[in-house]
Image (tube, rainbow, N blue to C red; front, top):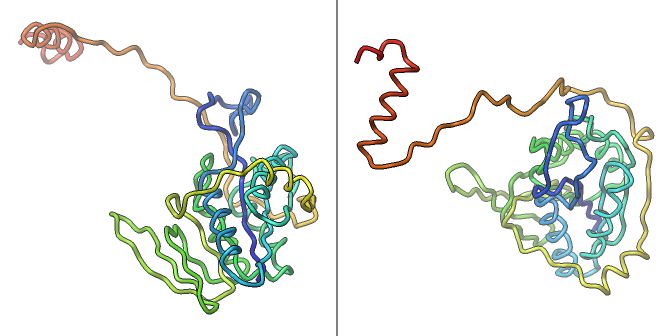
Length: 260
């Protein structure tokens, strides 16, 4: 069995964000980066399947982005994946979900993967579209937002998270693509020996330009923090006192109340 896991390197949400000078993405100057949360569940589920099945399925981890994403690939290798593929693209942040899915599909099409895991969505863009678009481009059966996974007799049985706490059960034949939701499992923490082993595992770098040049379906024109329109007012004191203060503010701000 051949398994592909697609992962993304995203900014640490604990760091401070600001728009870049063009206003098309965030400024990366002072940001720390990490493996996307949902993608970590995808890696863990693939490694658990490998540990369960006889014949040791082969796991490839793929990530798109600048050179720094290699560190994220190495973390997935240290968790138990067999090899990494880095689709190098210094301007991956400019690509919309359609373009990212096209790169994945163009790489995977001739590799004949039996099972592809992706995260349900990324923490930075959050579109939730890349996995399903890649499945459509590859002609694969697809189930999204999975929170439970079983594999027996060549059949995937998954439980999906739906709206309002409702769960749905789906069975899929291979080949298939699954997008993983948080709570699917508890990802392992890479041990030092496995981190050392990861350094010796195969890591292939592929130029994004070799996998086609799909145009964007969506373009980011501009984003910016909301403008401040004034500071808020905090009213303190006893209830009657603050009520009088509030009434005075309302009379001042709303012309129709001034005579009341």
